[in-house]
Length: 115
Length: 115
Image (cartoon, rainbow over all chains, first blue to last red; front, top):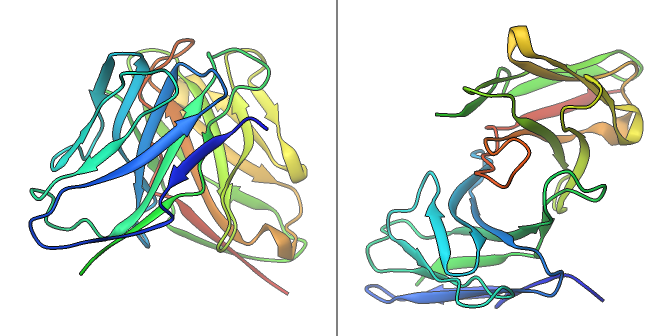
C-alpha cells in the first residue's frame, strides 16, 4: 500500500543531543513537508521541499535541519540548538497541484520528548 | 508574503444550528485554499479545497466554503451542526497557487457542538 511512514513513533532526547526523525513515502510525490504540533497552537511549518536536493525554511526552522537526497525520504534533525523540542512532529507529502487527489498525505507522527 | 488568520479560536453552537468558521488570507496573488479537520486524537482530514474553479466549494459531511477574492476570505459553513462535527478546523492557503509552495496552517478553530 502507498503511504507515508514516520519513525520512530516515540523518541526521547537527552540534553545537548541531536536526534533524527525519519519520513519515507512511496507515493511518488515531489513535495514533502515537516510540521510541528503543540497543544493549542495548531500545526507550524518547519521545512518543506518541492524537489530532490532542494528545500526551504518554513516559519520555525531555527534549531532544525533537513536533507532531501532522495525523492522518497525527507529526514528531520532536531539539533541541540532547539531549546524546546518536545512536540508532536508530522511529515506530509503532496501530489502536484491541480490533480483530483490533491491534498496533504500525512504520516502517523513522532512524539519527541526531552529526558 | 502570505499569511492566514482564523478569526475565532473557539466557536460554540447548538446541534441543528448553522456553523460559520472564518478564515482570511493575505497574498499578493490568488492562492489555492484548503480546509482540514482534526477530530480529537485523530489525524488530519481534508474537508474541501479551492483551486480557482468554482468559488463555492462543497466538501465532505455537508460543509462548504466560498472563496471571495475581494474580501480575501474563505469561510467554512454548514447549515446544521451535528455532534460529530466537534473538532478543530484549519484553514490552509497555498502561496504557490497552482504550483507547489509553502503550506501554512491557520491557528485553528475549535468547534464545540452542544446538544
